[in-house]
Image (cartoon, rainbow, N blue to C red; front, top):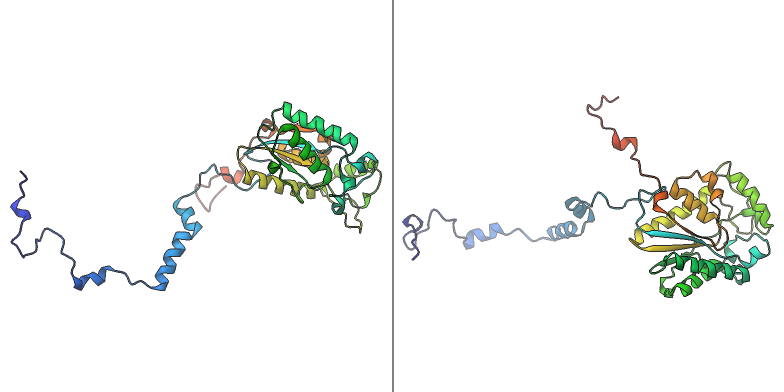
Length: 296
């Protein structure tokens, strides 16, 4: 049997002073906020504003931020592949004008096809493409290389993602159409400064410095590191310079020395995470002023 204390009871019809007053029709309207268009818009703004969500639910401190070279860490596994020899290269001719990058003449030579098949089997031996994404330049020889890699490794064509600009062959300006041996002059300039550009030309061929290429490949890596996580990505470049500048950036090598990392046609290289230098916090992140503004 439940016993109720007499102190909690009150005569019928009289309010109990120990309980909150009942809501009546007279005070009900005081409890309801006026529903106006301004109030509605304010509520919607709070519920959809990402900055409010950011403040209430701050991201993990280990979340990936802006990509930089050398990177703090890599979220994916990378393999770098230079496309096999092109028809132009087999003739010993420099061809870097992006206007012609999808032409048949920019496709693989017979020798280039053999180099590419070897590269595809090398990737298979390295177990790179048990599950991988293939990112080739749309330059003819690079895309053909990607198709051969996919075929040998049993990768569906839907995993080939063509790159339309960041992996274009380095534009060599006035050297366009010259003998391949003339490239050595470009590399001599590279060794002096990464900002030196080849002489310009008016046929639409870019004249890119090492620094220009560095910006492109950094943008590419930023996309890949944002779009994927825990994946394997095979990057297929039509030339060596994209890959040497990219690898130099990843390992923190002076860009003037990128030529030391030269890729032969059809060469495959794994990006070893151990080759990436340990991240060091800048002094501004380590130093703390204990008595502002009096800081030493």
